Length: 103
Image (tube, rainbow, N blue to C red; front, side, top):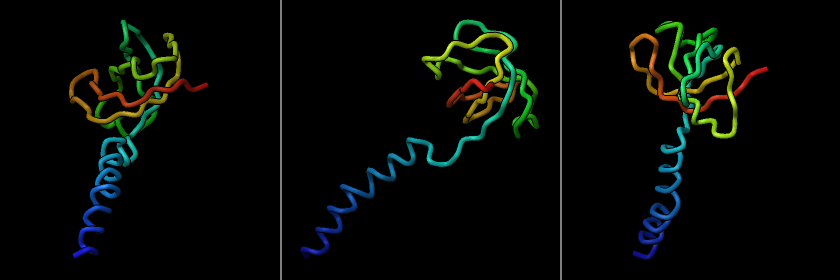
């Protein structure tokens, strides 16, 4: 009986939190694309997509710039965007995970 309770303790203390963290941190790689900012309005940008599998769905996307809190963006900037869900409309609406400036 003692061995069984040790395993239950181990699973509840180590395995379950680890699996939860992996699930919440998006353990699997999010897809990404590279594009150029064409328009900025508040915290959102209209981006012309240059590279990435998302080009199969559309050539422009609305990107939430607020996920990159300490970065200032300008029209003409080249950016790399990691994203989750994609709303099939034009321009594409994406769930923005991260945005980084590219030189």
